[in-house]
Length: 177
Image (cartoon, rainbow, N blue to C red; front, side):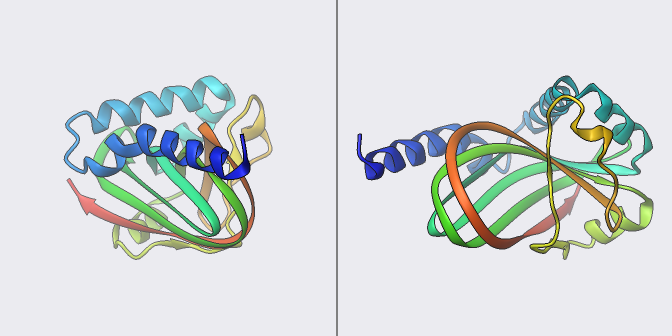
């Protein structure tokens, strides 16, 4: 299979895996999907319970679709929790530039250290620049992780294949419940 065939197959798989999550902003099972993602994060790294316990809140994105070839982007929907209570819906959009080829689906969770950081997110103009880094959720990965500027970010691959060395940032929206 040529590279273009691999890219096409990966993008098709990405579209199928994410289409329901990305296109269905009205998804009645959004909370179930978010809680399923939380369970998956905790299973991948049980030490992550510390972040769930000490954070003021968190945003959970059960499926973020990402793809690119030179230019790229990502998009996903999720929910925002204050402690364990859902307080609103959120979306993530990302634009990247650099060496990249392929597509993938991943989960993302952003922990907010305190009320002030969560309030900034709730204002709907929250952005993460290229300097923000995420920790891949694997056994023991959260042990050395800490909050940076009031947030801690974890990701977990769900499928696809992506090669990249890019620069970009994420922009988020928030809609109260």
